[in-house]
Structures are given as C-alpha cells and as structure tokens.
Image (cartoon, rainbow, N blue to C red):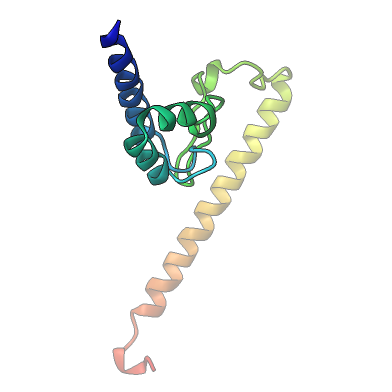
Length: 128
C-alpha cells in the first residue's frame, strides 16, 4: 500500500510531463508550455492534477499550422459529394471551349516568342 502512495503520483507526474513536452505550444491552455513543465517538475502531484484539469490540450479537431494543409480522407475522385457531370453535351461544349482557349494561348505565346527572336537579332550596339 505504501508503494502505491509513492508510485501513483510518480507515474502520474511522468505521464503528465511527457504529455506536456510532446504537446504543441499553440494547443496548451492557460499557461505557456514551459510554465506547465516547470509546474509539473517542481510540484509533481499538484502540477499533474492542474495539467490534467486546466492545461492539457482539448482533443478536438486539430488546427493546422500556417504551412500545413489538411488532407481529405478520400482521394479526389472518390470523395462524397463530388460534382458528377449529368449532361454530356454541356461537357463536350465546355471541353471544346477549353481546347480553343489553350490553342489561342499557344498561338499567342509562339507569336510573342517569334517577335522576341526577330527583335533580339539586331546589332548589340542598337540597344540602349
């Protein structure tokens, strides 16, 4: 029984300390992460209880960081609610417009490249 009086607070403190160290800074509540770690280290039993009650991150949907993307659980084409075409004629018309626009962009790019080559073949002394 005496061993349990020493072992339970020690296991609780180690558990809370590991949890505090591995949690993200922006998910910790009420105090900074370093303050929670110090509180658990200096006051193991009280600090551990306080961590469990007031400091531990709430396990809800995790917020992504500024440079993280959230990935969907489904591949793009298997995702529920994905738009599926219902009118083949409208699809064909849309694809025709896309092809025409792409061809026009290619034609303009080729013309611009040709103009740049013709304009760039002059004397280097003529450029100012």
